[in-house]
Image (cartoon, rainbow, N blue to C red; front, top):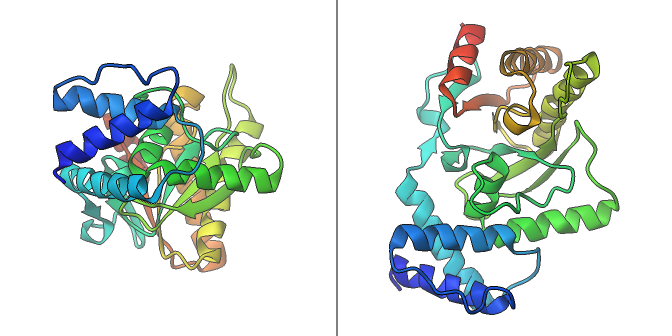
Length: 257
């Protein structure tokens, strides 16, 4: 199958699966089809799918990820020993684990085509990631607490694992509790990575953006927590600070110099 044929198969399957959208007309352009497919992935509740669907989905997403361009963190130049800074789409980074800024339900972003990192990671990993997260939440029996972390496979992403953490939401004045909880996110992810023998981890800018944690203070906490953890534990884990916005790139450059 060509990439276009795979995309059309996946769209038809997901539309037929839905009572609400099964009669939706499929657009003719590839860009519109990609947006529709992403939307259908985003709104789909966690559940199993036939092996044929999963096979074609995996072939499609792996090719899409390849076309976006995969960056191996080994090709990066460290800012400090064992600490890197990289600007780009974290879902294209080949590394031991990438960190996902999740919400307390831990099921990914259900908003169609939303630009948040949670949406991006779940979209390009494929539907098995949401199912795996649901199984973790059912086993736990309650929503994820802020500052904690869970680990899953990365499925169709170039990383080996995804570590999901729930950062604090800042509504109004920034407090010490917010800061402590954000530091806990970084510590929880580092500990979980090492428990799973992961040698490299890429952190997104946890709690910034829609969670409204001030960017500069969030970066300070990130760098301080990682640096202190490595010093106190003697950890050799390699850490990549991943940024998307130019503002965050400049903040981290200053901190890591």
